Amino acid sequence: MSASGALRSKSEDAPQPRPTNQMPDFAHSAELASRTVAEWPAERPIRLAKKTSNLFRYRQDADAALDLSAFDGVYAVDPQNLRASVGGLTTYENLVARTLPHGVSPMCVPQLRTITLGGAVTGLGIESPSFRNGLPHETVAAMDVLTGTGEVVRAEPTGEHSDLFFSFPNSYGTLGYALRLEIEVEPVSRYVALTHVPCRDYAAAVEVMDAAATQHSWEGQTVDFIDGTVFGPHETYVTLGRYTDDPGPTSDYTGMNIYYRSLQQRAADRLTVHDYLWRWDTDWFWCSRAMGAQNPYIRRLWPKSKLRSDVYWKMVALDRRYQFSARLDQLRNRPPREPVVQDVEVPLAALPEFLNFFDREVGISPVWLCPLQQRDPEALWSLYSFDPTTRYVNVGFWSTVPRTDGGDPTDGRVNRAIEAEVTRLGGRKSLYSTSFYGRDEFYRIYGGDEYWKVKNRYDPDGRFSELYDKCVSAV
Image (cartoon, rainbow, N blue to C red; front, side, top):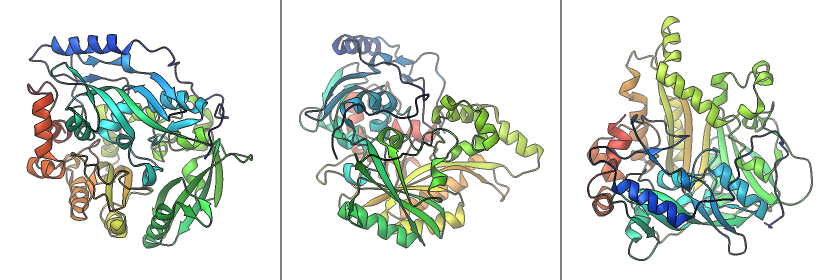
């Protein structure tokens, strides 16, 4: 890898993030936020006001919400020491726009543009460098957190507030809000060269991912990125990426061409580093097909600037609110559909067993795969702990399943079956979407003992929601 000059997408008509060079004074903004929480009416729960969301579970409407928009932006980028100081409400789109001109990037950039840095740390995030860099929270050096008492504390791996530092990931804003984060960044090259390795079955995909992740190479080439796409039991592609500055043609998947379909059409590819980071966002992986955006006739008329995950998310939110699809299915005498929108992690060795279960009981295709391993084997992330000696794989699937059994989709039968299988295999499930765990099981899986110690210290009056109530009960 090599640091290079200004790194730009060739997609000139892509929407440009707003300038983030001028940030309000942090100390002043933090003082105002602290005062706001301290003066917040005791009877009114505190909820964060956000313009965008990547949650797929119920969010309760509120008459008033805490505005932390002053912490949307980048305070500093230090390419020499490979550090950046970033507001917690900063989207990765804006963060990347500030770091790439310095030839550096966050060490793990989640796939969707409007995920915020604070959201990826408190709610977890993942991407194709996670086999070597871990998850976003593992690249945080320190963070300033607004707690339920109105105090802003500096949480670091050591010191007075290390308990908050290691409990913050997967707390989903129930322990506090990250106002500023000091993160590691890494040098990048201008391009990412891709190799799509076809695999005849799930066991072969495991072999490729495990070998590439262990050796950080494949067939003599360095491997900087690994992910996979499952189209069926006998059609899986493991995509291996490497940084390069070698000149050459690049592909563009921000217009008529669709990235995930290219995996079946070519063995190798090449993208600018900017376009690689957002390769999944244009079609929100493959979910744009549900909105008709993959129909070539519709796509030609669809504004290029609106081929974005946040646009699709708003369409999904409207459909969920007004039940357009459900009513249409009812008129057509089709069975109701249960939303199955999940990311789960299972041990890599157990992936074939999980996918065979998934094919049999769920049947969604395609499915995304992303191997990961804890970066620091000595760290203990209290609310989302992994065996640091084990390599895991994230399995992502986002669709609906027809309930041909005549059941009510709100009972979550399919989602409950997935939860049980993930637990049986020694895995974990991300909490950004619907969950159905019982309270005791939930806190047994997600570090309840430590959670309550930290919750009682930093939010003794329960100004923020409880984790179970926010992630399960509210559903």
